[in-house]
Image 1 (cartoon, one colour):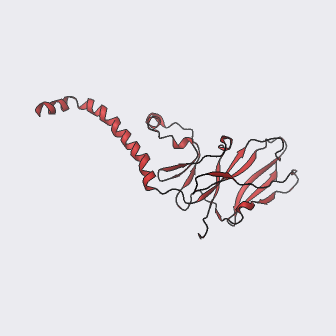
Image 2 (cartoon, helix red, strand yellow):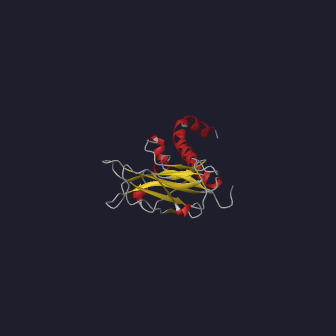
Image 3 (spheres, helix red, strand yellow):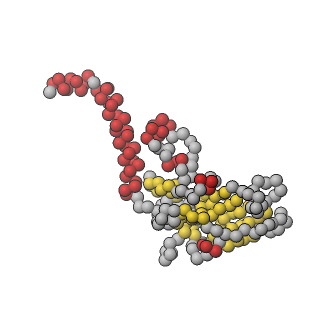
Amino acid sequence: MADRGRFLRENAFLLAAVLLPLVVVGFFLAATAIPRWVVPPPAYDLLLRTTGYPDQAAPRVAVDFVVRDERVEARVRALPAGVYPQVPKLFLFDHKTMNVSEIPFDLPASLTETDPALTVAVPALASRRVLAQARAPDGYALNTPGYGSPGVFGGLFGMGAHAERISLVNKGRAVAIAFPSPQYGYSVSAVGWLMNEGSR
């Protein structure tokens, strides 16, 4: 017993050097796993705005998605000459299936700079109430890619994993959002949260 105590005293630094990384790994594993067990999954659908690749047939317009009286509208205006056009896309994240699907809407074939801005309805969402707020009633918020370095420990233990992909986050839990095509995973922003049927 005395020999064991002397061994521990003489090799305390070596033991600490071995045990400390194990403790740190265990801490980060617990910090990652526990939220998945205790934080419920998302309970609300989310409308997302992004852009696709333009083509020659795309109208030269700019589109802003806005929420007015808890309904989504597309406000369309002509692009000035020389401005590079983008193709606006509206997507729905379904919290039940965890899938993302495109929401169709019609754009005017052409607008001139002298034409007034137009308001275009989104028929597929005509019956859905939308909350234009950053955080859903259940606490989830959209997290878009961040390119800051997580540091040495962050890189080793995956601290930057959620920051490198689009996801919904709430109290440490992250739910990844996957678009139908990688081309839509850029310049993503939240339009609003869709209220569930029967909610007030």
